[in-house]
Length: 422
Ligand code: HEM
Image (cartoon, rainbow, N blue to C red; front, side, top):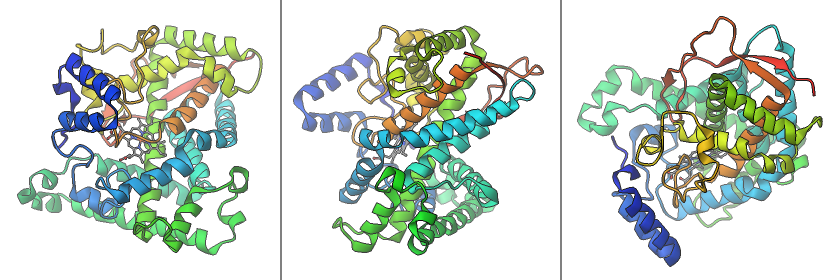
């Protein structure tokens, strides 16, 4: 409903055929392909009243209409935050945050279960905030309020409101309180984002962004520089800056933490797969404490576990969910079987339409390298340093899903960690 981007309606062979041809014939053919697959103007997002209210009249990258403004914003994000080079430069942040998380889990070892859902949200939020803004925002009372505001924002973005699709019934959204919730979240988020901008403009940099020097240029300072000096040639105003910051906060936190949440859920439900992954990671890392990028490169089964998590249905932004469950594409699609990728070249980068958790084409996700670096590193550390089991009182795991921009578990994931001595 309202989503015209479902490639499932095309015959798989035909789809792949056009795609192969398009790659041979270059970008022009590729544009045509997108036009065939996406029956509306393919590079535009569906317009929605809720998006406009929450995302500063569609001024963020993710929903901005296709054109020069969107092109400029996306290239700023890629160049200054999401390129492979930038992602590598954030390694020390990933390491420090992983060490903190491992320490927190150790404190609960053997006795209590840990709330992995909560920890993953905080971890991914801290990694993305330190990388993009030079500091964390999740600490203290204000931080807790911000994280829960972000959660509500994503629930509202993922809600199908009646008025969006049938405008003459939009009075229902007013009566049932939906519009009031949207207005309230938009107002509170705006106050928070104003605070982020004010802090950067008023406080000395070492206070406003303690991580800044370690990682060279800082994304939010570059945005502010563009806004203050109008250096791109397109009108980027204060609302644009707030909308982009919001994109990074939300895209960088929710999607990435969901993948970790479902990966650990499936590993806990499939002890043989968990063991196989632990064997791979422990064999490669041996008795070293730290996992290097070089080690990660060798962990093929880890990559297959993450691919399988992405396939088994974490995203609803486009109907990737249906495609990933299509029997025409996958054997036993309902089963969690990372081995299906063992001798397969299928990847999630947008060229294989059976697996498009990050979308495809011009509007595809620019955050793949950032998300994968975060997910692979943390997951490898969790299975390297701990043995995991479900809490004793949990016999059947509750697999109910909660809708939103990304599908989360409805109840938090609790697990017991036993420290592994290597
Ligand atoms: C596992 C993690 C992630 C998943 C599964 C994911 C998935 C997606 C999907 C499905 C889209 C829409 C693509 C399309 O319409 O073709 C998207 C767009 C986008 N994502 Fe991600 N994403 C992830 C992580 C990130 C991260 C870490 C960032 C940045 C910090 C990010 C930033 C964006 C942006 C800016 C867009 C809009 C691109 C555009 O409209 O041109 N994403 N993502």
